[in-house]
Amino acid sequence: MSSNNLTSLGRRRKVAARPHLPKRRFGRVAAVASLIFLGALMLVGPTGVRAWSESARMLDQREMELSALQAERDRIANRVELLDPAHADPDLVGELLRSNLNVAHQDELVLSRDD
Image (cartoon, rainbow, N blue to C red):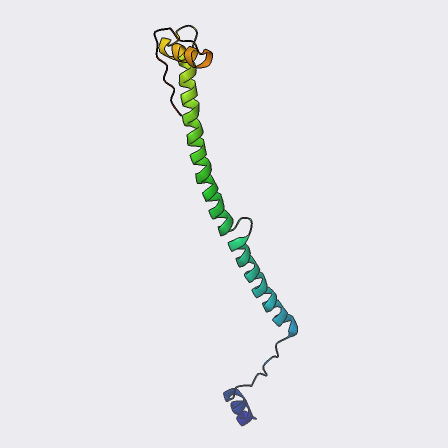
C-alpha cells in the first residue's frame, strides 16, 4: 500500500479537457458583437466622433454669424444714437433728408453712387 501511495502521489492526474459548451461560445460571440456595435456607435452614432466634429463645425459657423450680427447691431445702435431727437447729428440728418425726400438746394450738385 505504501508503494501504491507513492506512485499515486508522484503521478499527475490527467484532467480531461472540457468541451466548449455552446452557451460559452454564444456568450463570447455575443460579447464580441456587442463590442463591435458599441465601437461603431462611438464612431458614427448620434453622439459619436462624427457628430462631435459636425457640432464643432456648426459651432464655428454660428460664432462667425454671431460676430457679424453683433457688428451690424453696433452699427445700427450708433446710427440710432446719431439720430436721437435731443441731439441729432446735422450731417446725418441732412444726408437722410436728401436721400429719402429728394430735397436739394438749387446751388447743390447731386452725385449718385452705386453701392
